[in-house]
Length: 161
Image (cartoon, rainbow, N blue to C red; front, side, top):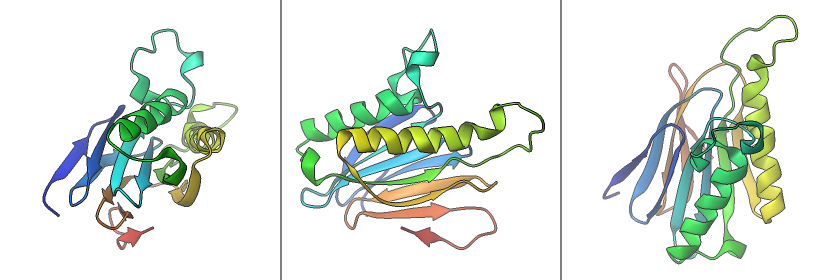
């Protein structure tokens, strides 16, 4: 691996083998990794919310599943990836806070995961693996040389999907 590219919260970026790309501290957020196994071009989006149409001030397209995934696909295609070969892996979507009653904040992670899967289906991108839900945060790395998605969590063994 020559370089580790960092993606912030509500941000996205792409990289090419031999580089890798990472985002830290996914709680209810989802880390969506897209990968073209032929060109070895990968992309990672750190999305915070499921749906940009529900928010008035939604100028940051990377913040939302519906717009962030589309932008990630477009950037990868511009870099030489083929959309028909792209595959996806997702992680995050944790329920970080115990919520009682009818409060919907607790299920934002689940909504993020569902919205991400729905958008991938709409775009015809196959979801190969996921590590979502439960109640702990994750840091992820997409290694563009292999397409492996590393998931690191405090007190848990490294998971590679």
